[in-house]
Length: 141
Image (cartoon, rainbow, N blue to C red; front, side, top):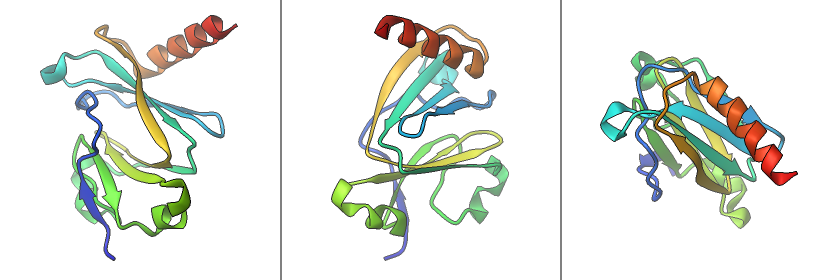
């Protein structure tokens, strides 16, 4: 079956077009901090992907998306359906997404995802992600 793309069932803040996202992976959980588009209030959002089986950061910018080996849309989240990667993990009901940013594309194979944080403040995604991780760790201690 060929791969097709669709909108995920979850609704997350719209991806902005300026900032490069920040990513942290601990071997199981992937945190993604990205700029939220002004049309959706601006600021930053942090997604938490759990039970991550695979992820890849590709330096593919929005001008190169038509050459992608998987369905992807500019500045958008696409759920990739019919993927052999997800089929190998069917018992786990794994999901496979592509997320497009200005100068890179992220693909991630995972079990669950949630909006872990959102701020209207504008700062660099890596700064916000470091702050989120330090406050989350402090709250857990």
